Length: 368
Image 1 (spheres, rainbow, N blue to C red):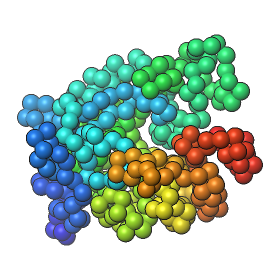
Image 2: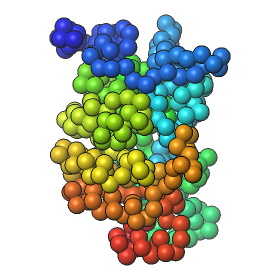
Image 3: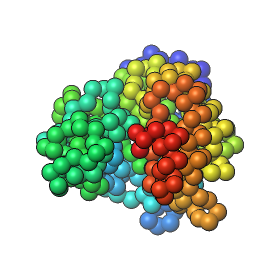
Image 4: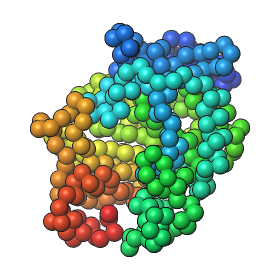
């Protein structure tokens, strides 16, 4: 372990990636392997990094991509990947993140799509706003300004109707952010760094955002990402206590928690998300996550997301949180000191007029 670290620190980025690529990057760097098995079309089980990532001598590293589209409410080009180093019981993309499926795409293939997207972009954000979190300040995604020629009462009024475009997921702006989402093999930086280089060749106005569970964000991998042109991370902290995390995801979370400070220290833009899952991830966990974030920077954009039953956490055994539960956790996290905290998935926990009234009385009418 020590000799590997000593060697890596003296290498160029290209050589460092060659060392990292030799076998399981986590084991090589002294970390446990993730919950990485994915299912092939033949029903076999393979490691995600070998089944959904490959090197082509002619085109470089290639990744299995399920789809590419302008996602809502994120308002950026999302690249949905097959293969993941977690096995999350509540995964909403399990049909492709834990199953080998999609089209092989190289960094150049990605860049070709990005080149087309450049003509579609209507909002150019600074790097510090290269997040999903910042999208909510621009648009409510109702489309009224386009379809009816008028704005709704709670419109942010930040954009003109000409900046609102239609995507498969609805109306909104198209921002200058390219996000890799879905399955996560960030423990293998090679493809992402090649992709970032090609994307920046299309335009330096693009920001590259990696949506991640954080498992692959070891110190050495983060160093490679820092040198390799990545701009931002969206870190999904699924739970704070290790036993809870293992139950949900099949892995440890110890180095994930410590990655918050490392990400900021490297100068990346960071946003954090956590879920409210009744009886599993509740206010006590949220307080500890908020304290972890606040120790680094109370201004880190953070989202408290309401869980809805899916995949292996299904009704009636599992349920969404109530509005009272969400308000309790939100209030507790704010009391820790988080300055840029928001809730999301309102439709999951605000179902009645009484729910809306409770939320307005507790937090104010501008919460939704």
